[in-house]
Image (tube, rainbow, N blue to C red):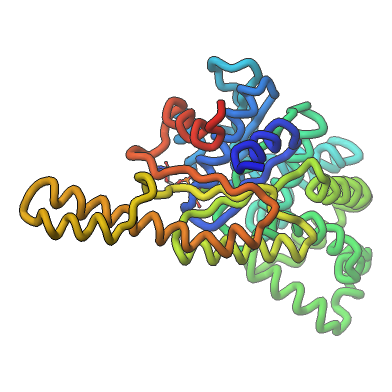
Length: 363
Ligand SMILES: Nc1ncnc2c1ncn2[C@@H]1O[C@H](COP(=O)(O)OP(=O)(O)OP(=O)(O)O)[C@@H](O)[C@H]1O
Ligand SMILES: [Mg+2]
């Protein structure tokens, strides 16, 4: 299977594509290009960025994006939509959805502890991202949801977040906090003290009363959250969810990509495709040394420096290919797709379409 064909099948068949990789390799650009391809195939595609930076809007040539998908018009058979995850409003919507009534929702949403954890607690962003995915995939009826993840060394934060929530709900500390008597909490319990200290660190000093009020108000909602978290977990490991690893051909980013692939494998998830972005151009099969030798022979002439440049570029391309050998072997049988470094940054649909063209060279 050639790389391009394998990736084409993925965009045709997958329900969710998660683009992950280290900082600056081109995750946002790739995610947008894959969604564009989906729309061209007639699918109802949405690209979601979890990254609060405005890069996705920029890539699509748009001013801004919000937590509600925005439709992008263009010359394709399907639909292309884009949105930027807003952790806090997604959390608020979830609370409203699981509350028994408006009064319970109001008590939680106005609680100071909630207002802090809903944006500050680590993992909340990843958890809400999973939640949003579920909503887009299951409830908003998108055929293809492409996820642009923020730069992180730990691809698993995203997958683990819903598991951590269910673990937390099962944890005895949570059960203790839910217990109506504060005396119970005051009981000398090192674990509880450590928990409160940790929470205090995140949200500031006078947190205990707020926290207790929050857990009091939360009563009765765990079931809804737990059920939802379990479904999100199932969706993330579903065969229709595929992880696309994005890398660039440099020793350090390739090492990070390899680390990502390892981490995914530990969770039983394989890389569905490897996209190597920003490769230097290739000029046929000549040997760098031969071109450099000609450059030396013709030294001082314009042609001589052209040959020297050609030799240097060929050497660079060879070095880039060499960095990719092990990673490509590591992700077998995933297709490896190469995208060249363009002269311009990607900040409009025309340039994005060129990236899509390189990802799917056969149309
Ligand atoms: N093939 C390419 N040729 C030229 N420029 C590119 C290419 N791919 C990406 N870029 C540019 O490189 C920059 C980084 O790309 P992008 O934002 O997609 O990376 P990212 O992995 O999402 O970064 P971050 O980790 O910061 O979120 C952008 O300015 C983008 O326009
Ligand atoms: Mg990005």
